[in-house]
Image (tube, rainbow, N blue to C red; front, top):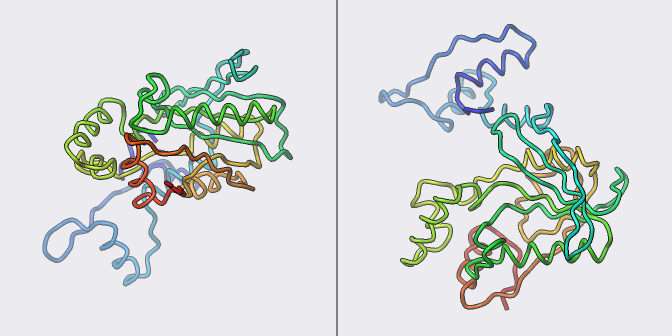
Length: 263
């Protein structure tokens, strides 16, 4: 869970199977001498009738079946949007710290209004006009306040998971003409490397089982529902584009599948 390598995964797989936590490892080569990668290995497994699993599959299994985040505090937090409790969590895998702002009493049968929000220092704190993050954050808190109950989960996943400094490098590339997806890829990252396993564990710890998710991103459905949480409704959280955000939002719509009107 700290290093996603085959060595660690082989030990995990043996332990999950109820065996001694040890394994013998070999690597399969292609006929041309190159190391086989997943597409090659899938063909090899099919040919030889072998079962196959990826490191990512093992991580997802462990995130579903084991607890890796722990609550460390839950003080009251009065805000201009109303009175919340802020639940603070730490991951024992990454040691990252996350918080959830909770208003009202959360019951397992409730369809809770939820926003899963990745940190954006530039937008949330400095009110940057390069993205819609800050306005989405405020709008989500307003909607929770109007309802008198809900959860805003704030995850430490700056720049869709690439980190603050890499996000600044991506901004440099965007200033030269790249869109947000192209910039991430030039830096060697996938367009979106965020992980929602930790956030899903936090929501379950708070008591959320069914939610009305505030998002424009359909990919969050698959990520969150895979952890035993039911999304009963999507609540749009669209912010009208301006001259600074239009290209950014167009890239999110066309390349990441976000549901946006952009009128």
